[in-house]
Image (cartoon, rainbow, N blue to C red):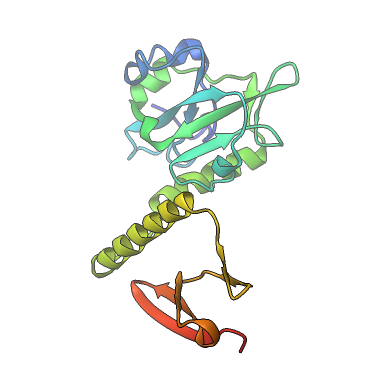
Length: 215
């Protein structure tokens, strides 16, 4: 079993040769993958932990900013700009981690077959981003049941609005020679009595504000 003087740390990479020997990763790891240890440093040697959690990460060509610094709770890019894994020779690689690719490897098997890639070392920023990403996944806030209906209505209305905008990209209309910003797409009255109605949706509640043109 792993002891407290183990050299393994969260964020370490396994060598590709030894990663392929692990049963949980059989047929998963290829030339474009690197296996990352995600178990916390303190849990690796703990007697109560019977497995080591790893993620088979895919090597990608570039960093998507939307997936960096734990912005996305399901996907993480660890790449260049001080976030990449430094490889011997001064190069670095960009890897994509997905929570859906997590695997649990029995400690006995991990200790027997796994070997740490001493040529790949994550910088401090990368390890910090990995910790934040792992914590954010389990810190997601659920939507209360009583609000799910309202949220669904708002999302449906937003989708309908985006579809309407695609059909008619113009957001301005001419009334009596004056451009009017269509906030609620409702204009009533005519000639000198024209009036713009602005509709604002807040959690499914529609509120109208009226203003006479030229006022």
